[in-house]
Length: 210
Image 1 (cartoon, helix red, strand yellow):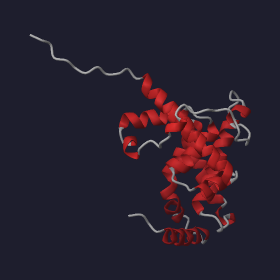
Image 2 (cartoon, one colour; image 1 turned 90 degrees about the vertical axis):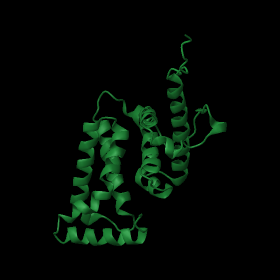
Image 3 (cartoon, helix red, strand yellow; image 1 turned 30 degrees about the horizontal axis):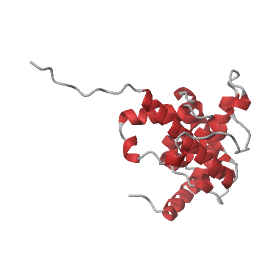
Image 4 (spheres, helix red, strand yellow; image 1 turned 60 degrees about the vertical axis):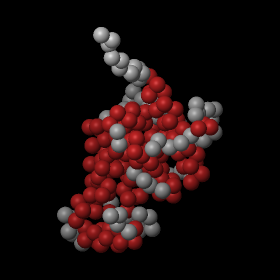
């Protein structure tokens, strides 16, 4: 059963007060709902499990240390994911072999990208994602996206953040968030379709005549 947003926010507020009052063990309960999401967000940006784990742990540690500075205007999860995104970006910057300009293109959303299946765009059915092979292909397809598209796709479609939250976490306008998300979904679908077409078609089995 999904916890109502108001109750969830109230519970988080109580946990934050407990942590600030010195009951530090409550911090584990505070971040528990977001552990997997933070890790997956870091992984989709970095594509290295060990780096993603390191970034997630550093994000939680920074959130703990800076909890007193958290402003209650935004949701705790929004604040936490923004820390994780910034940590992942810094990790990428430290990878000397990756030129920064190729990792984080400018904020201009205009481009000449033309999706192969623009006229036939449909989101990948959630039931298909449950199949192991399809899930693997989707993960590999996401890995091929540029980092800024992986970020928005992971926040919105994997972690279920709404547009406003995603925009706040990424530090870009709602308009740019919508444009970037649409392009990320279209690019993902094209890559996904291309990957599925690479697989050799299975021939139907035929009985051998006696």
